[in-house]
Each structure stands twice: as C-alpha cells, then as structure tokens.
Image (cartoon, rainbow, N blue to C red; front, top):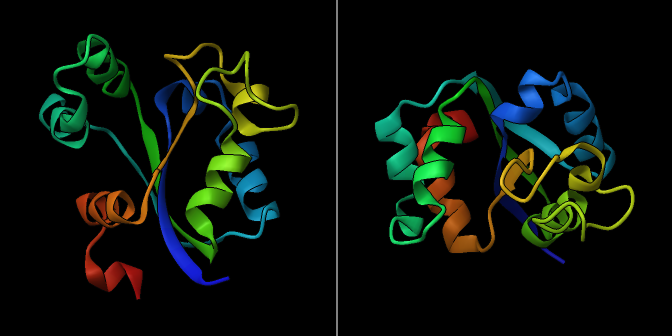
Length: 139
C-alpha cells in the first residue's frame, strides 16, 4: 500500500443540512488525515471550470446550479490508497444503491444531491487539489 492524496467536497446540501461535522468525522474514522480544509462558496465560473469535464452532459447545468447554491467544504485528504478508500467510504453516487453505513447512504437525498464529492483517479485528484489549494497549503 502507498500513501496517496485525494480531494473531497462536502456539497451544499450536506452543509445546509448540518451534516458537515458528521461527514468529516466519518472520513477521519476511516483513517484519513486532513491536510487542508476550508469553507468556500463557488461562483458560477468556478463551478463551470471545476466541472468542465461534464460540460456536454445533460446534468451539467443543474450540477453548476446546485454547487453554487450555498457554502461547500473543500478538503485535501491523505492515507494509504486514499482515492479508492474515500470512494468506498462515500458509497455509490445513487444513495439508493449505496451500502449501509456509507456517507451517501446516511446523508444524500438523491443521485443529484449526493452530499459529497471525491476524486476518482490520481490524475483527477492532482487537478482537483490544485484547483482549490496552493502547494504551500499541502506541505
């Protein structure tokens, strides 16, 4: 196993519902070290840029609207096999299909409002971490 870094967002639905603390606690309980974290509010331009990979998909406009509706918490996380590990802790994108005890099973209300984002590959994690955090923040 190797120590790796990943990126995560506690999305506006979970922040508004008051679940950020419980989500962060679940992440830490799964062995993640929080390297950096902060609350942010995405502008439309930032949301469009962050989710540009989805620009041609039918859900893109709704995703941008959702991600700009309120505060989010962005996090840089680290542990052995962090990317796969976080995706396991998060659960399936559709909370109806997520395993019991996962973050999405516990806190998501729909496939669109699924409370948390996590990087899906090392290359994605590097880009996403760089979008929100400077190198000095991740020492």
